[in-house]
Length: 135
Image (tube, rainbow, N blue to C red):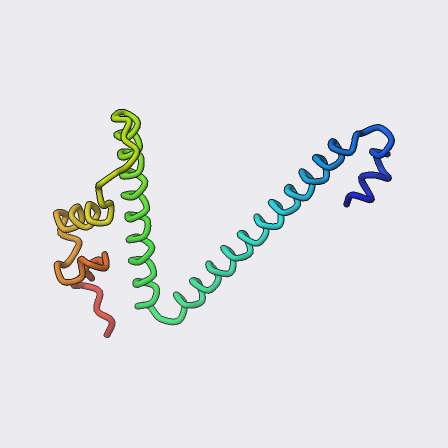
């Protein structure tokens, strides 16, 4: 890349060494960013393809996958709200350390909503529906 840029724009004659170094570093970082984005898209595509194949194998796998992703979405939404709330509280009180356990707060909220069993509250699993038997 550096050779092509040097020959195309004649950078050795008109640019200082530090400017060329900065340009080459920027081009390399941009190429790495593009490569990283391609790898992320490829990984996401493969994960979704595997999910599609597994869901097509059995109806219970499909229901379990939907329940899992529903739980993950609710968990992510809860954590996002908690982070925003703690960040605004920290900014208003100028404290640097938070003493609230977010996982315990999430489990308490789920227990109040009746979505979490007492015996699996330690791992954060949701209670299965009575109508979703796998027989």
